[in-house]
Amino acid sequence: KKKGNKSVSSQFRTSLNSLMKSINETETHYIRCIKSNQAKMPGTFDTSYVLDQLRTGGVFSAADIRGKGFPFRKAHKSFRKHFLPLTYTMTSLKSISKDDDQSFCSAVIDEMAKSVSSSGEAFKAQIIVGTTQVLYKASAHLELEAKRSGVIQEAFTAVDTSETGFVASAAVSGIVASLSLEGDVSGAVEEFAEEDGRISFDSFCQLVDSMQ
Image (cartoon, rainbow, N blue to C red; front, top):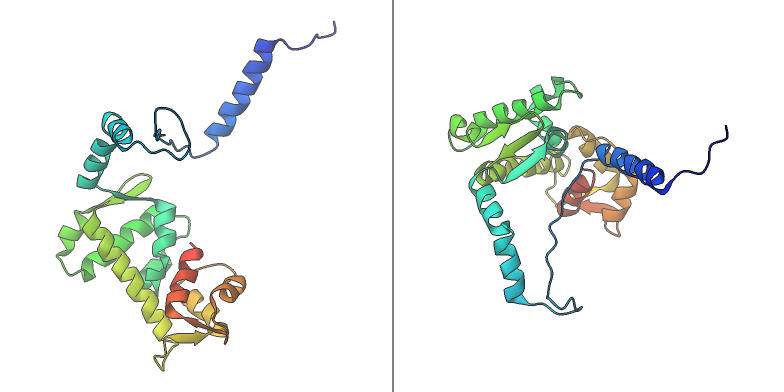
């Protein structure tokens, strides 16, 4: 018996199943929308109306709770990628498998605890390595970012021996490799280099960030 055309409800179910499959294959994020004015007019911003939405929608409360807890959060893979330059001085990190992001995160924290200005235990208390994310407080964030910036500068000045604040574009790939970063930097070097073919430290930092 020849099948007839699909009913509207059957088509809807097929479409819905396809949509749910796509959603389940992605990392879902939710956005809270705030209306700028009740009349839905462009270019009009009603401050009191927006403020009321933020209050009643729990946005301020959520931000306050998060700020008092662990406001900085990165997935294990993102944390590893961002702080990979630390391998320049923390050589023990290089022995950790590329597939074991969680162990890398824990090792970074252990190494940082040995060098921070505050006590190591106090530093560790500000960071949690969860099953999928690393959560950390503002002070730990500052320590981590300061260490990362310092390491990048150290790798840069190891080539910039004359302390000019610039290195030749040809030397950039070597510095990037010393920071354990992967990827082709040739195109990025052209974007950040000066007219004379050199690249400044600030531009180099931007280049590193663009690779992550």
